[in-house]
Length: 255
Image (cartoon, rainbow, N blue to C red; front, top):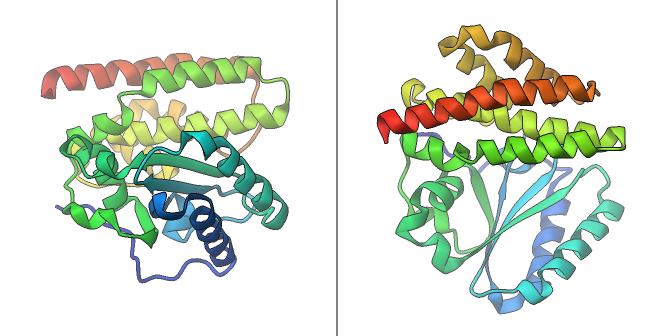
């Protein structure tokens, strides 16, 4: 069974089209001939974005390195968008070289993301270099074997957060990661792919019904409700540790 791709013929949400147009304009102006292609992923790419809640998630593919201007360019775009499009909560960037994307080593990383999770909005669409993918353990581990690092990083961020909005932001990010990683643990059995983290948690429970309390708590964190730090850290230490061990066990069994 091949995984679905995002319909590139479906128009973006009207409120977000000017944002996308401005992004392309700024990137072309800033990078010139070095810019190979631009992609969106996440809710804006899927046309399910919610103003005031959704990020603009961008992949920038270039011919060569542009580290000397990267920080300035990206911060300038974020600042301009904060003023012009306040309903966009954040602009996040991933970068890659053409040579990295068009490589056998990137089949289950860049290849999968561009083919099934992203939409090209400028330049040569590199997703066409890859065929459709089937649900597999290779995809799951490529995207989630780093879950242990994520838990450690966001556990620390939540513990050190001195503003409620900073803690809530960290809660939502790690909850989304853990819910998606939960489903990816069983994806090779279930033979599907879900972007929605709540849906990921629901399907995961079909295989691990004893984890309902943990999944319900992650959904609460995802909702944006401020939760006592001790409780959040307890969730990360308990379910996070369990999930890490399950990935290691499955990798040992499947390879």
